[in-house]
Length: 152
Image 1 (tube, rainbow, N blue to C red):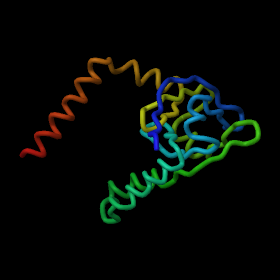
Image 2 (image 1 turned 180 degrees about the vertical axis):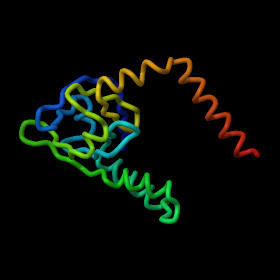
Image 3 (image 1 turned 90 degrees about the horizontal axis):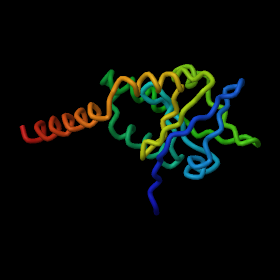
């Protein structure tokens, strides 16, 4: 089975009732329904199968006695599969829209394994704070730290 790869950046709008239309290229990858959940300041979208896999991984690793674990599980497990209506719109829960601060102008960004759905203004501010070079250096630092911790 071919792996789903999400890529690209798409601008679209949230309607007055909080419904979004998933851009065609992304919709073709997830089909008529997709799994949506909380992200880091945004809403995450992935295929329903990927959503089930994510929840399964969390169920194996979560520990009810670890506060940091339960906080993340609480966020991720509020996700669900949402279907398009007859006009190709998806109504997301108000709590997710409010969490991500989605107002009118929305940007969907393919992140290889998932899609991040951002309020356009919030994403523009976030992206303007970090240069490409700084992003590369932070990943290299993470890789170096991970290597050092496995060797130490």
